[in-house]
Amino acid sequence: TMQTFLISFFIPLMIRKRKALAMAAPERRGDELKDGIIRTAVVAGGAVAAQSAVLCVVALYKNIPLRGEIGLYLFSTVLFMLAAVAFGVMLGSFTRRLACFAQLYMMCSNLIIFTSGLIFPYYLMPKWLSIASRIFSPIANIAVELKAVNLKGISWDAAWPQLAGTALYTVFWLAAGGIMYALSIKKERRLANATE
Image 1 (cartoon, rainbow, N blue to C red):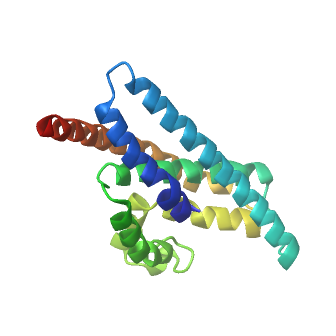
Image 2 (cartoon, one colour):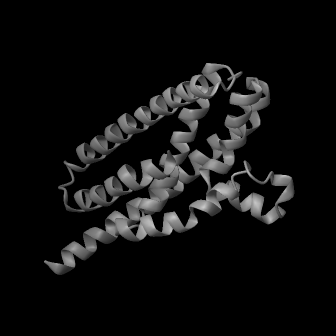
């Protein structure tokens, strides 16, 4: 979901909006920003709905018992999509060409999955790697919790530590990525003014 969301929608949107915000008159910048937020909310909300539907269909088709509370699953999925948006804002702040981003992401996708805690538990990883994966990867903060919700039926109490970690990740990278993106817009504006 995150790969499709970032490559097919969010990073291209960030590239286009950087140019639009750099060229827009000051009174139009708010409208451009609002348009980007609404588009992101619609697509991310659709991704959450699609994930839920696919999970239910696979559970019925493959006869997998889903034991978790649906409210906790939906909340976790929404939080994951917010973390993916925060990750995308940070990546979008320095991405200029989608093809380069897609190649780099595809090369790193196995690393992202292997360090998510699903394949190798954190206690089997070197300490520095488990810390780095939680700092940089939105999947690493919530994947184990989502798996436990679906297959083990954990409660809100057991899920809370990873939910809190994902929320902290989201707030940090949204703020840091937002600052980096604002600086990239200023740089784009300076380059556009210099070429005129």
